Length: 435
Image 1 (cartoon, one colour):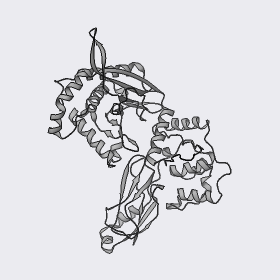
Image 2 (cartoon, one colour; image 1 turned 180 degrees about the horizontal axis):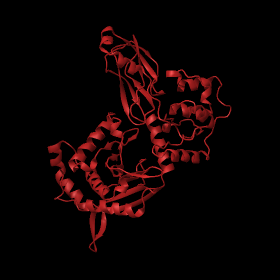
Image 3 (cartoon, helix red, strand yellow; image 1 turned 180 degrees about the vertical axis):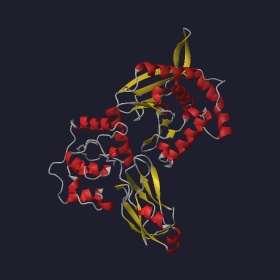
Image 4 (cartoon, helix red, strand yellow; image 1 turned 120 degrees about the vertical axis):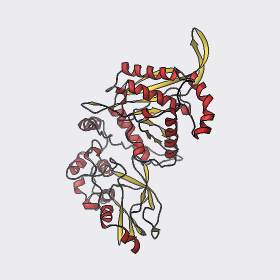
């Protein structure tokens, strides 16, 4: 009996996934729960496990191809012993198409022809983007997916057969207010404007690097944030000489005792979460006709890999000690670089702390991590001469740079917030509790 393996829904708002690498080939024997493929979505990388034991008979989707949730990607001929172990209900659930994504997840400002087709049924973002780029009325495309769903392959076949309009729909300046109107209609889940297509000549010797799904997602979210949130910036400098001395005194013993590196970042995050309790408006989000102040304080941190930037989340950071924060940071960073983050690790952030100082930056204007209301960059700690009690002294100084959504926040409250963070950092010393 052949079982269809479908593209799983790896998160509530995930509507499609890209097969980055097959871990099996036709003819291979697999056991139930064995990994079949590595999948990349706009939130996380994950493995697709086998739902049955048996032999791989067909690989339907090629590596590098993006397909909608619920798409048939692989077939397995069940072994006799395994078939008896799997309840009929489980087999039916595995083969059933995934629920269609919510309308709020559709790309913003679709072409008129694509929008007309979308009114009759729902399509994946990949299908909608392709239809928009080529000016295709999706109602004219014959779907071959589950329950007649139009897939990306169907659209490409339609284009190859000459079904696209003579003039593709080109992005224009007029598309900006369209995207804005969509965001206003659904403020809780705004959609980024469709990426523009650039006809840039490639000269001999130029290197052409294909854009990965992760990079596409980063680009779309950065454009969305800059397009929708009116950014403002402010900065304070902080004397962290006492913090530097204290951390240098205890870091070696801390490492021997706990097995975790004690960096400066946990101290900064601790000061931030305490200040967020005093000024909770910075722990909020814009929702069109209302502002939602979050009860939980979940701190997003930026972790860079060789090819992308991920933003995992420290949940309930206000309830953790400096030791707890250090342990959480090291765990998230290690799992990010190993490609082991889960969807839950990447969701739920309410405020972002970005450690740009780790690569020597002394001043930056970070883009807000939408839908959050603010992001703080901790710059490099630099020794320089400053005036202390009318005398010049060498002190360890750091700049804290805050980007804020001016729809939610104003300079007064953000200035007070930064002064609170500054005061807490400058008061760190031998009496500071690590646990």
